[in-house]
Amino acid sequence: MLHTRSGPRTPSRWSAPSLTRQELALVGITALWGATFLVVHLAVQHSGPLFFVGLRFLTAGLISVVVFRRTLAGLTRRELGAGAAIGVTIFLGYALQTLGLQTIPSSTSAFLTALYVPIVPLLQWAVFRRAPRPAALAGVALAFAGLVLLAGPGATGLSLSAGEVVTLVSTVAIAAEIVLIGVFAGTVDLGRVTVVQLLVGGGLSLAVMPVAGEAVPAFSWVWLLAAVGLGAASCLIQLTMNWAQQSVSPTRATVIYAGEPVWGGIVGRLAGDRLPGLALAGAALIVAGVLVSELRPRPRGKRTVHHPGSPPSRIPAERPHT
Figure 1 (cartoon, rainbow, N blue to C red):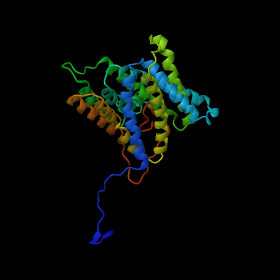
Figure 2: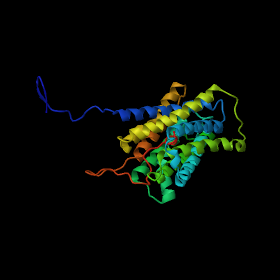
Figure 3: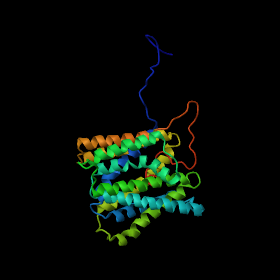
Figure 4: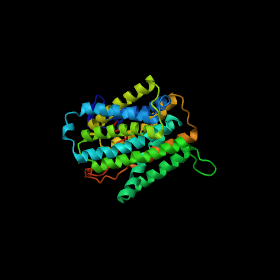
C-alpha cells in the first residue's frame, strides 16, 4: 500500500500504458516503414521499378555484407538455397509493389500491402494443409471488407485499378516470403541468409530489366538518394528488430507493426494524398483485420512457445532483409 501525507492510498487498478526502449524503437522503425511508401512513390517518377528495386536491395545487400562479414565464411548450401528462395519472393513482392506505386497513391499502397498479414495463414493452409485459426479467418474477412471499401466498389462489385491489382499480387509474394522465413527459422544463420536474399532479390531485379524492356534511367539524385537511403534503412530496421524482439513478445510487436499502413497514410496525407471517407473506413478495417488475425489464445500459467517452422508474427517483407 502506498502512503501519502493525507494517509494511505490504494494503487490504481488501471495505469497509463508505458513503452520500453525496445518498444519505442519498434514504433520508430514502423513509422520509417510507413514513410518508405511515399519515398518509393516519388522515386519511381524518375526511374523504372526494376532498376530502382535492384539498386535498393543491392545497396542493402552490400551493407549487410559489411555487417555480417565475419560469419560469411561459414555459408552452407542450405543457407544459400534458403536465401535464394527468399530472395525470389523479395524480387517479386517489391518489384510488383513498386510497379503499382507508379500509378496509385502511397497511402493506398500502404494499406493494400498490409493485407499480406492475413494472407499468410491462407497460404499456409494451401501449401501445408494447416487450417487457419478462427481469429485468422475473422481477420481475413475484416481485411477483405476493408479492401472493398478502400477500392471503392462499383455497382457490379469490387473494382480495382491496374496498380491496385498489381499491388495485391505483390502481397501474395510477400506472404510467401514470411512463410519461407518460418520454414527455415532456427536452422540457418540469420546474417548469412539475409546477405544472400538481399543480393539475390536485387540481382534478379536488374537481370530482368532487358526482358521487361526497361532501360537504365537518366541520372537523378532523386532515385539515387532514395535507393541508397532505403537500402541503409533496411539494414537498420532489421538490426533494430533483432535487438528489440529479444525482449518484446511477438504479439506486442505485431500490434506495433500493424501501425505501418497508418503511418504510411499519415505521411501520404501530409504529402497531399486525400483518401475519401469510405476509403478511410476500409483502411481502418484492414488494420483491424491485421490485428485480429494475429490474436492467439494464451492459457493461464503457461508461457507461449514459438515452435520451429512457424512463421514469426511479423517480419515485413523488406524487413528481414530490410
